[in-house]
Length: 349
Ligand code: MRU
Image (cartoon, rainbow, N blue to C red; front, side, top):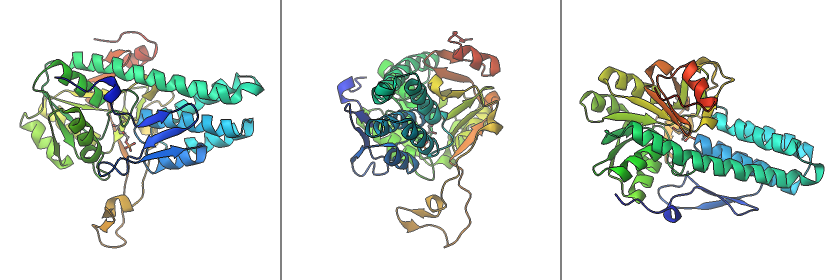
C-alpha cells in the first residue's frame, strides 16, 4: 500500500540548529500544539509530563536539552547540573541516561572553547543514528513477521516515540507497505491511553487499517486466533533479555504464550542496558495517583482512593520470541544473543 513519503512523515522532535520543538503529546489527538524548548530544565519538565515521550525520543530530546543548556552556559558546572536534572526526569527508559552520557562524553573530550558545538554535534548524531536504526529494524521486523496480517500492539511505538517511523509500530508500517490486508490491533494502554490517543492517530494518518481495543480484551482476542503476532516496544532490555515496557505488556506476553502466538519486542540497541543484569534490577517509574483516579479532569474513583501506578512492567526473556533491533534479530532471547547484538554480530537463529 502507498504509505506517506518521508517529507509527509510524522516527526515529534524537530531541531532547527538552535532550538528544539516538540509536538505536545499530552494534547493529541485533540490538537497539534508545538512547544519550543530552550534548555535542560524545560526539556526535563516536558519529558516528565510526557509532552515528549517514548524511550528513544526522550533520549534525543534530553541530548538537545543539554546541548541548549551548554549553548547558553558553556561550562562544566552547567554540564553537570543539566545532566542531573535531565537524567532525573524519568528513570526507566535507559535511552535517556544513555543519550545524556554520550553528550557528556563528547563535551569532556572537546576543548573548553568548543563545549557547546561538541554537545550540539553529538545530539544531532544521536538523532541521525536513531532515525537510521528505526529504518533498519523495521526491515528486520517485517522479514520476521512476513506472514502476519493482523498484529496486536501496546502503547505507542511509532514516529511519536522514536527516531524515524518507529520501533514496533515501524515494523507494522513496513509490513503494511509490503502486503495488502495488514491490520493493527492497538491496545488502548491505560491509564494515559497512548494506544488509543497516539497509535490510532498515527495509523489513521498513515492510512493503515486498525482497531483500538481495551487492554483487557487482548488475551481473549489472542486465544480466539484474531491476531497472528504481538509486537511491542521496549524501554530497557536487561543483559539477560528481560524487558521493561509500558505497563500491561507482561499480561500480553503471558496471553500470547498461552495462545501460541509469537510475542516480539522491537527497539534500537540504545535501549539495551548491559549494566542491568536482569529485569529485577530495572527501576520502575511510579507515577501520580491522579493518572488513575481521574480522566480528562473528571474523577473516576472516590476522592482519596489509594493507588498503585507503575508506568512499566517487566516481561521475562523466556516469554519473548524474538528481539528485533537495527543490528538484527535475537531469537531465542537470552544473555548470549543479547550480547551478540551488542557486539554487532548477526544473532538471527
Ligand atoms: O509513554 P511512555 O513514554 O510512558 O511510554 C514509553 C513507551 O513509549 C513505551 O513503553 C514503548 O512501548 C517503548 S518506547 C518506543
